Image (cartoon, rainbow, N blue to C red; front, side):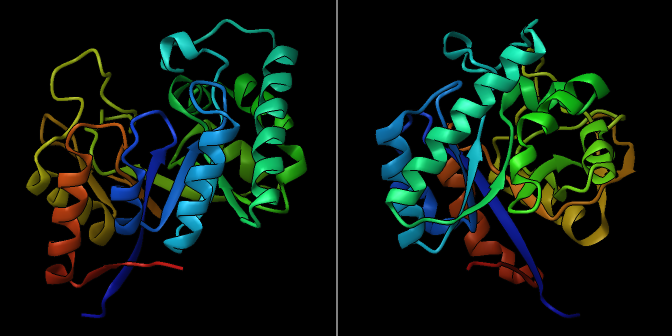
Length: 248
């Protein structure tokens, strides 16, 4: 069997301060750009580290809600959301230019990510907010989601994302963080979860049902307590399953 190359991404620049440990172990990253976390200094510092480690850099915009780390849905006026996304990406762009770092992708964060996966109205609002990036970067989106369909319909370039450290429901939504077993913390279980998705295009739910899923990139949450342990284990074990992390 041929060796399979995969992309592993992490959400970073969120105040944890572990980027120097994580970036050598991944191939793309999503840097918070002020909505839920992050500012000019953190964007610059993480972007430089990513460049040094040959890690592709993405923007990680969010609902403007630092108090709740962007993890609660906001009843926000569309124009206000568009304005906030514009501000976040303008800041991100400006910082990347000063550091000569290329923008590879955009990945929305938290509740915004989950909401545009289900709501056509919100998905279209988000796409309107990032219209200027349509032909320049990729958009990381979940497979079989509303945002994936809308993005393709509107000419955006997408990469399907799956979560190696999160459990799934039957509709391919993520198990809510308010429920037990939403997050997979055991590195060996993360490995098996990832292998099933990467090699068989399948994901198993907590109930043991198996559904089709397609992924071009796999996320390990950088703010998870076990993130470094998981990534270290994956780095050691993936090659035994003829999988490598494709770096720039």
